[in-house]
Amino acid sequence: MGVWRRLLVFGGVSLRGCGGVRVPLGGSRLVICRRQFSGAESETLKQRRSQIMSRGLPKQKPIEGVKQVIVVASGKGGVGKSTTAVNLALALAANDSSKAVGLLDVDVYGPSIPKMMNLKGNPELSQSNLMRPLLNYGIACMSMGFLVEETAPLVWRGLMVMSAIEKLLRQVDWGQLDYLVVDMPPGTGDVQLSVSQNVPISGAVIVSTPQDIALMDAHKGAEMFRKVHVPVLGLVQNMSVFQCPKCKHKTHIFGADGARRLARTLDLDILGDIPLHLNIREASDTGQPIVFSQPESDEAKAYLRIATEVEHFMKFIFQRTHLEKHLVWLRLRERESRASQGYKAETWV
Image (tube, rainbow, N blue to C red; front, side, top):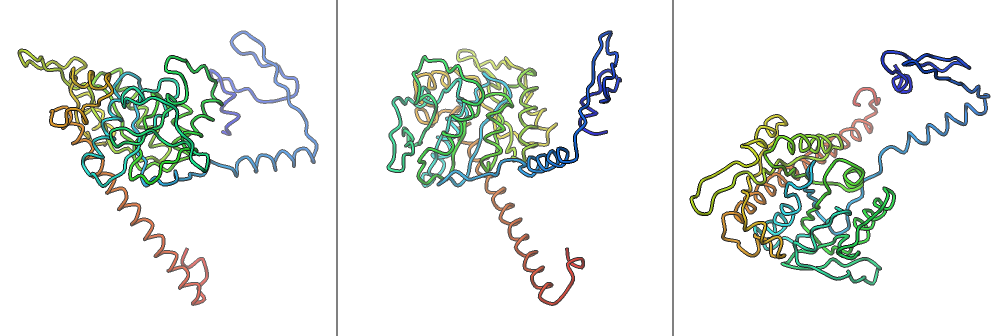
């Protein structure tokens, strides 16, 4: 069954185009009209359809100066995604001081990076008319929050949002970065697809609480990245447990090990657990992320361990990609060799 016929099937009744025929549907009457095209018009439509289909998905173009892009995403808002992105960027830099790390906030409607990184002001422009990221704690940062007033809502339609995302991706002078951590908005909509299809992403980190409601959307987020061929590095189980500061009793407020069960379902790894702790919230609100302000705390060490896991998987993906490129190169050499010896293409393709 063709795509259009599938679209015209409702409740088991197939609506087929025919001149002036009325088809009953749920008590209503629907008129299906079919226009007769001339030979020239039909050929023009075929050519137009071929042009559209040949476009395919947008071609991915690397961000200039950026070696690897890591996106931090979640299906649902309010699970600590931005806090994780900020501390992950700081932890990557802390684990290896030779690495240059950047942080990009593409959550256009609710940018959090300026507050969490204690940054204000408008970006300066370079000689090539590119925006220069703001710098704090050794991390280069860019966010829509630097370009609008803090309390000003962005009442934008989709096209304006896509234009803003394009500027954040292509009109920023990052210099030379080893890692660019991207704080994605919640959901699986236009922004996620635009970033995934336009920029080669090295890996995605999915953040969720153990709560079933959050896990449902985290599952969708992971599947979305798989559909657009972005490697999912693993899950971060945020707010995993609360420990009473007085009696030390532990309570699983949002449930226990929900993200671990989801990881098994998706055949993914758990990158780490982050507890529900007052220090993390206070550090974020004051613009002094816990990895920077309390590096010896248990909470900061949890982020540092996650960064180590991310680096491990990134190296594995890089080695696999390098191997795949080498195999392609060997295959091309084999083809050239066989072709020079007079073999027909059918014998070696």
